[in-house]
Amino acid sequence: MILVDDGLATGATMTSAARAVRREQPARVVVAVPVASEEACSELARGAADECVCLERPEPFVAVGIWYERFDQTSDEEVIACLERSAEAESRRARSSPGS
Image (cartoon, rainbow, N blue to C red; front, side):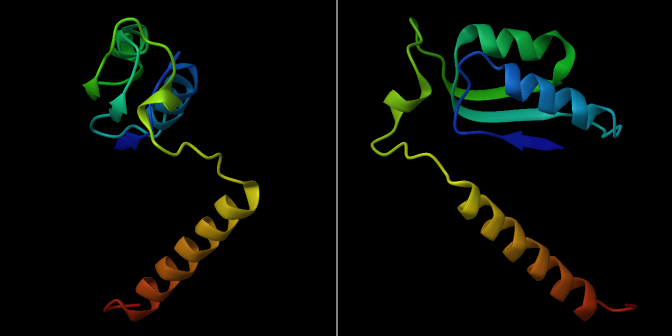
């Protein structure tokens, strides 16, 4: 299982997500992020994830948002719309797959 985020400051949310996913017993849990604090990556490496792939670990780490030209928040409505589109696409794939 690969978990992806826009970046990790403390890593607390990703650590919780990785632990939740691990309960499903995937072969591996890999976290992939473009930027993170060294502390966040170290915390994940202590067992929540099997691997943390991170392109940049700046020192000192200030904030995830400074690494983006635009770092707008995603609204609840946008998230719900994305999830609904994904569910619809998955449903179409399931109906069109052989043996369904």
